[in-house]
Amino acid sequence: MMNIFKKNNKLLTVMTAVIMTAALSACSLQMNRLNDEKPLYSSDDSYRTVYEIFVYSFCDSDGDGIGDLQGVISRLDYIEDLGFDAIWLSPICPSPTYHKYDVTDYKAVDPEYGDLSDYEALIAECHARNIRVYNDTVMNHSSSEHPWFKEACDYLRSLAPGEEPDASACRYLEYYNFTDKESGGYSRVLGTDWFYEARFWSGMPDLNLDSPLVRAEFRDIAAFWLDEGCDGFRMDAVTSYYTGDKNMSIEALGRFVSDVKELDPDAYIVCEGWSSQADYSEYYASGADSMFDFEFADSDGIIANTLRGSCTAERYVSTQLAEQGLYASFNPDYINAPFYTNHDMGRSAGYYAGEYADARVKMAGALNLLMSGTAYVYYGEELGMKGSGKDENKRAPMQWSSDPDATGMCSGPAGMDNISMKYGSYEDQVKDENSVYNYYREAIRLRRIFPAIARGDIAAILHSDAGCAVYIKVAEGCDPVMIAINTSSEEVTVKIPEMYCDYSLLAGTLNTSSDKITYRSGTLTLPAYDVAVITKDQK
Ligand code: CA
Image (tube, rainbow, N blue to C red; front, side):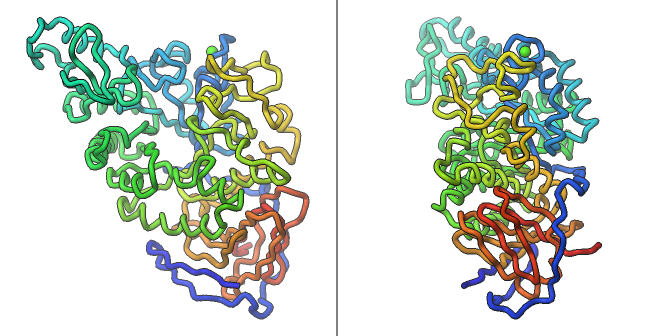
């Protein structure tokens, strides 16, 4: 069997081939230590494990069926216990829609969610727990109900037929892209022969990011939320900033990033560029900390395909190794942003069918959480919630309880289908040690116990084939870890090369069955869909 070794251009760790049939190593039998016995690593920077909260559907505190900020506060014990140390809030600013990606006031909280004092309380509660808070920030477009847009349209309507607009008469004219030429992606200003760019929908007019006034507005908006205690921003739709012009989009993002970093060098910025890896990797040139790693996400990404067997474990690790160099070539300080699903994607419990579906649902969570950088988990994935098709279904009420009238339960977006869940609610799953919930909790704990998982780069791949990979992650200031994954439905046995026999301690495991992981005399036996973390034994 071949061993595959790669050169890591960041860590300069070059390995040589090792033959699988090596003589018995000196590695000795070690005890399997339970994940729960070890303290969690406490981050003081942006390497975190982030919980994406779709606020509307997460937790309702006042009985109107709509999630709100006090609801989020009431579930911080839950979030903290799972091991998350940051949250990404879906947009909270006033908006006419339930999803609130079309903003009418960038410096306020939508009354459905509470007010600024609730936001400040949330920040205080989060910071007391070392949980950071990232606001979803929509700079590509505003709502057509935003006063900026309404005032600009009112001005255009006030013009006499054939009269040229005067930019000095209405400052908001330059906030948007108005034209008197009708074309695709543009909508008519009602009552006029003027059109405005609105690529997503007529209710979302594209902002003109060329305008120094718009740039100043967003610098001001960032300053406002940073003053409120916000720790960073999740930037919506950055690849749409300039439709068809990537370089302009990267420049506009870069201007915002430099404004934010000037206001607060520790503020963190993660961006949504839903496109190919070759494309979104270039956005690291903006100086943004993180780009969501779409290559691994969704029903057709590397994680899901690896567990379906249509992608090899070898590719899961070799792609991570390759992207380390790719992303660093655009931003040496990049922090990858692995995620598996989000509010725009079908729930992952629907990705798998058949005998191994449950094991695959669980292990997919691990394949996301074992990745380097700041990993994201969409709320409810830790319960294996269902929901696909229309967007509303992907944003179903968090299943705190199977009783829709239980405390905190939301009604969900209007128009959502009646979704039958595959797994029980949180109330049911918390009591079941084999639940998806408890698997996710263990996977997050593993990530938090061994900081090299998040902070490290892959320094060597010791073994990789279709269904199994063994690799080492190394990070400055952290103990290195060896990670072994079996993404197949068969038990695998791997002989660890002699030169790694100082990795002697089976320090953490994730099991999807009662079959035991063993590591004896340098031989690792990994049951189907299981994960082992092996460390040097310094105790
Ligand atoms: Ca509410």
